[in-house]
Image 1: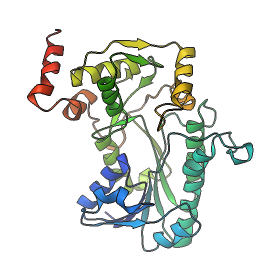
Image 2: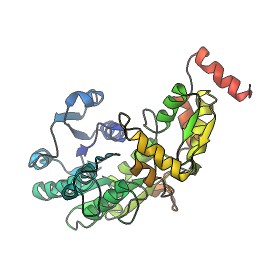
Image 3: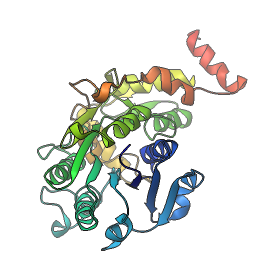
Length: 323
């Protein structure tokens, strides 16, 4: 591999930790910035990884840290943003947190690449991103794509995954937690369509693209082999965990109301913008790149969602027996 010293923004997150581990397993030196070093402690034991406590949003930090690197991977992203004042909102009317993470940070990374001579960048976007979408999240991601692909002096490749699943994901595991806490699942946007992709397949695409000259300037959609409605995904989680739960699907109007109410929960669990993003089908119309054979959700998710002990497995056996 012609790149040996990789800088990974967002390397301590769910997808990031898998990307960093894969790069380290290939003997590559990896630098991961983190505002709080303890949040990336799971990376400290990897032999070729250095975690640096730094805020990449501060002026001059990226240029200082990028020196002596030959490629950068940007995995940074947020799912929620405060509304902000009108003068804080992006040019396509998205919140300031979306603007900072999805537009301004990629711009700053490109500027630092030019200043330090780094000529390769992989950028994480999102399936369905575009300036004309109803969701602020997707509009800001679309602007970020436009910014990085416009660069003619840095080799950029953009990835647009559907929802990503795998151990420690915040999607299937969230529903598994909810089925443990509530007797009935009241589900907004039950007909929303997804084509979930395994985190290992996302990592494989990033690694393959890093050394591919043909991938420069390209934008790749990443999806799994099968399309699901949100209702079907929750049904699968119930089956895999052995928790039989009635699922009550809400109308579009009630789904929007539910999302608005959930904005006041810690996290939050859901926002009105999340609801709007689910109005855009999260599915692919193209084959996976680089000859990747995508892993099936049923084959992978069962391994980390299924109960482990005999007592925990008993409800799952009852589920299969329809008792």
